Length: 212
Ligand SMILES: [Zn+2]
Image (cartoon, rainbow, N blue to C red; front, side, top):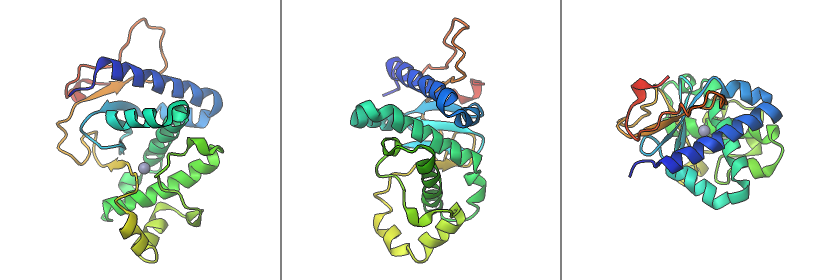
């Protein structure tokens, strides 16, 4: 089932609201967000993900579940999620992974990011439960946390790794680690609503080459 027009428009509106919130309350994040491209996907990734060139993707079903579960707190959760994905891009986690185990490094990067955001957004309503957060990794970078997960925390990691909600760090330009044949829709979040048209691209097809 393809992403519907309603699902797309609703998510695009939500992203636009977050960009406004960034520019008013968190301008640092607003500047970083402007360097990224956002899209909604059905098949490419299971949760959310970021590519090395700043293409941030959200799975439509994951977003729907987040909205349904958190209701009035959903906008804060989504803002946190967008900031989280931006961090993967800004901190260049795709390049820094090198030949490490992808999932373990992704978890390590998530611990590093979420602690940073935990202090940035000083309100626990922003944090998405099930994500990686542990004060013991304070002031450690992803590589250092990875070594912990590989050594002293290995048993714990092996036991809980499948229960951790984790996003996807992709090497490429939007194809992720999958086969790249899923459909996705680009959400223009430049906040320019004065041109009289909705220039977001949504035809429900795999059309990544025709955007931007
Ligand atoms: Zn992440």
